[in-house]
Image (spheres, rainbow, N blue to C red):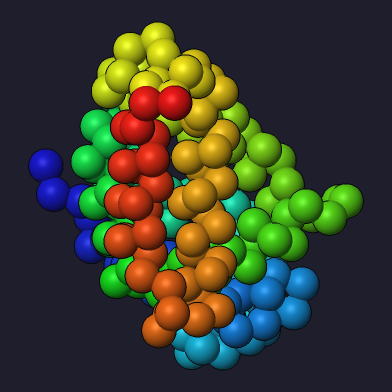
Length: 194
């Protein structure tokens, strides 16, 4: 059954607002981004924007959820199985093709560690899920012990840290940091015997 045209238009407008919010947050950070700036970018008044997102925090959560939906790995975080390690590498490749989204995510991640930031709860929960998923990935690839002797639970936070750290380095100096190659080098370290 086809969706009503009004609903479809509303979804398209929400998607347009989310893209604009990503751009504004990437440019100014969350604290520097305003609903007015996002509204202006999509040709709405601030009051018109509030029809789609009641608060700046609602918009932020929607941006973060949309980013996860755009990830090729989002299916695994929703209980559909572990990520094969080569899919994790493909996700790194995919991120290298979308610097604006990576920049927005990184800016929000950095800001979220401050007390009272509205994204803190989102990232805390997300990282718990991602560490669990990465442990499942490593267990699927290596069993209960990686070649170097670590358990999947010990190595999972390291894998996540490498992925996020590479994103920051790549954003700062894309000519010097090949995110995909560096990630594959890290995977080869995981595969080496201690």
